[in-house]
Each structure stands twice: as C-alpha cells, then as structure tokens.
Length: 150
Image (cartoon, rainbow, N blue to C red; front, side, top):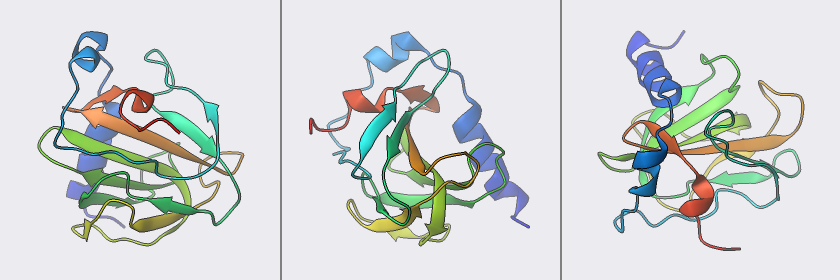
C-alpha cells in the first residue's frame, strides 16, 4: 500500500481541470522538453477529454523522462492510469507517464532528461501505449505545444 501523501500528490496532479487561457501562457524556457518515447501518436490532447497524448509502440519499449526533475509519484493507485510515474520539474511543471509495464524509478528519486524511467505496457488500458501529460500549475496543457518537432 502506498503512503497516503503519495496518492494525494498523484490525485491532485491528475484531477485538476484544464484552462485554455492558462495553457496559452505556459511557455517556460527553464524546462527543455524531449520526447518520452518513440512510436506513433494514436491519441491527441483534448481539453474536454484526453488530458495528454497517447504514443503507441511495442511492449517493453523504453520510456524516458521528458525533462529532468524529481519523481513525486510512482505506483498504480490511480484508477485508469495503470502503473504511473509523475515527475516534478519545477514549481510550475509536472509530467505524467501512464500504463507502464515496468517502473524503473522510485519516489523522491532525481532523474535527468532522457533517463529511462519505465517500459511501455498496457496496465490500466487495453493496448500497449504511453499516456503522456504535461501539467502547468496543476492544469493539463497540450504536450505537442512543448515537445520538439519530430
């Protein structure tokens, strides 16, 4: 069982509704984003539904930290996300990585951009994919606005 504080951090990071006005002002040059996984985008951000993007590839494909930071949640206590990792990058930004097969990092661990943090799986979903979110001040923003062009 996870400590209650870890679950509370994860729930508050994931459950905050979107604000298009704040999303427009979410540029922060201090966070340098990179793609968390190879694969095809099979689901796009939708402020009224999907709070991130879905990237599909093969089981056990590496998942990487999209930016450096500290792991604030690593577990499976949030229904619908399967094995989930949340990384805090600074006071404004978090990133979330859901449906992992294996989690390779622990809570409170510092990670660097590009570090392998998990492997792709299908926990909490019906297909092998990564659900990836970026949160700005707790609110979901479109990751495609922050990630470099492929």
